[in-house]
Image (cartoon, rainbow, N blue to C red; front, side, top):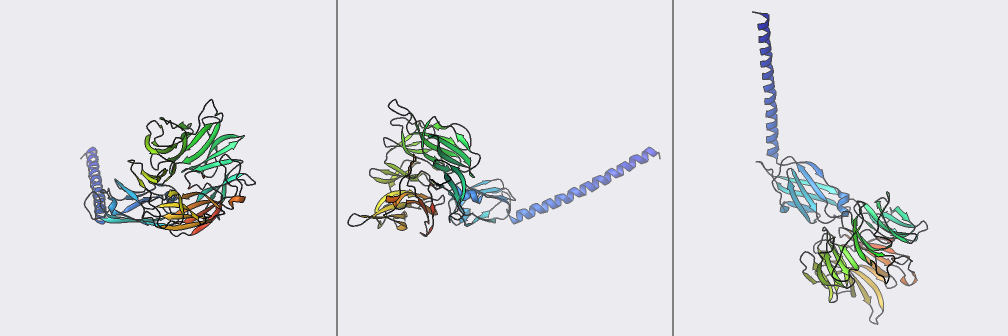
Length: 468
């Protein structure tokens, strides 16, 4: 046999050996993969990854818990999901993920458990139950103090008032709002109005271009995201005309100029307005008492009759509480239907404004003037009124003090009541938005009526509008 023939046969033997070994390896891998697949199917879907941002969840609606599993999932119905403590949510299923979106901010400093029952893969196999827990952090807020020796200062504080941190100081701060990622601050420099935008630590300050020299008022921010709005009046407004109380909107996240909401059909001056939660719409009250639901352009505003004031729209809600001549009404902004606000049972005094509390059936926070039989004003009672009219007192403010504003925390757990103590001896400052020089913000837990603390300052960042 020739040397070449022996070499050919040797190469053939090595090739057959390699093919046999390769086939064996593939067989083992297929066997292992098959066993793994059988085990995964036999066990049902299991969680491999969890995504949730508890800090964002206590600040704004729309936070999500996303569970990634070992299998592509059959559609999960909301009836399969249980959230403790109870809070409204929606559910979506995509591939191996099931997402739970919380439609209201969550309560702070709370342990949450989310259970998804009877979860099934798209293939054969048993169902499984997915359970995840997480803890939300203590709630923080921003607060403004004017007239300090070192200038007007915005503080970040906890709800005990023991960890206040100064984040921004300026010689003259009129007002401010907090968005998801920024502070939006209305200031005056050299007697000119400016809007400054910083990060939430007060840094990276930049100026928002205003429509011209003038005055800024009624600064507001949307419940989540970066949208802001304000009313603007020209500095040279006079008999020759000019812009007065025109509504502008912008984004704190970019450098684009503010855009005017172009109302038509009557007096376009804006007396009051609100962002409608989770939409691009705004509820606007004009100087001629028209109540309008509008988009950012304003030209397609839907009329909702006349009104005296807008009391508020709860976070996560499409129901506005407004004051008409015939009384306080609730208007569903999705269809324009309305009803009278439930009257308080055994009201502790003459009713005033009503601040809606987030959550279905959560009621309102209302102020009542306690008047003695001889007509003497005794106190202001701030109370929670549920949807059946049951009334619980949260704060009894003596007649020597004045209640300026009531706000509700994002989740509806706390009420903030702004009070000017000793009103007779508490002079107003000289700002465009004038306020008493001494101000206290009382924080009260709504369910228990327990007062947490009284903080010096005003403009708590829960508040959707300026005091007044």
